[in-house]
Image 1 (cartoon, rainbow, N blue to C red):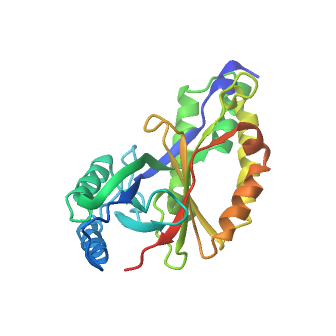
Image 2: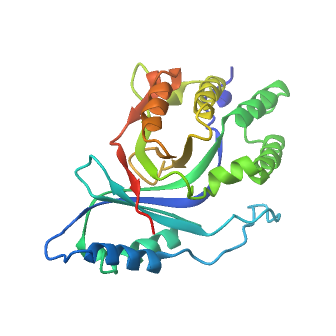
Image 3: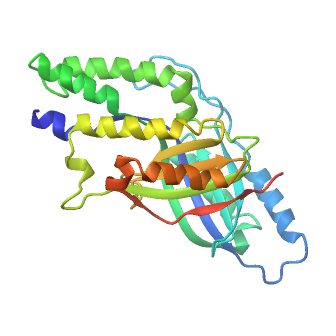
Length: 278
């Protein structure tokens, strides 16, 4: 296998930016039900930005994103923190505006930041990138040449236009899954186990097997994967929604027995709670 196939990173598609904010609540001097009023006021001020059309990098029109983003409030359970606020927005500037809006509310004045995670909704194209790299090698070309780039652009556009990928890049807040679990993760880069030195074909194989495990929980868990390389110390964020919080335990346990997690995954802290209803 050539070096280009081995070292080539997978192509990715990106959608909405995401920000997960973790807070403690300073409850001193809060009158009864005052916190409820603060939450409702903050929710009203955040709202959702105006809808916008979406255009691909090649300037070809495609289906617009289903909305322009959302925010939700999660009461944390079993954590030293109290509240998680999740924002999805169409741009980094709009994430910054949501962050500032929350800080300027009456609720923001009683929030003590504990942790924050900045990322962007992502769909990794491992299988497509590996296939095109093999094609380039077979024809005597190389990754990144004109034929490869043209084929990758066409395949990426087709993927982005699919309903399945659109749901991953522009995820809706599920109406009937009130429990939330969030955690950051990275792939190992140790001397004996280094994800980034595996061949692209091997990484594609491992991720396909990992995806099969996740699909067994369709209808029970909604999963949002966000990429954070270059944005945070961790490389990805995983946000899970479910009706039954035990599904989090079952899903994460199953996935840890996958080879890709057992050998190559590192996990951060887990934050679990329940969405605060309107």
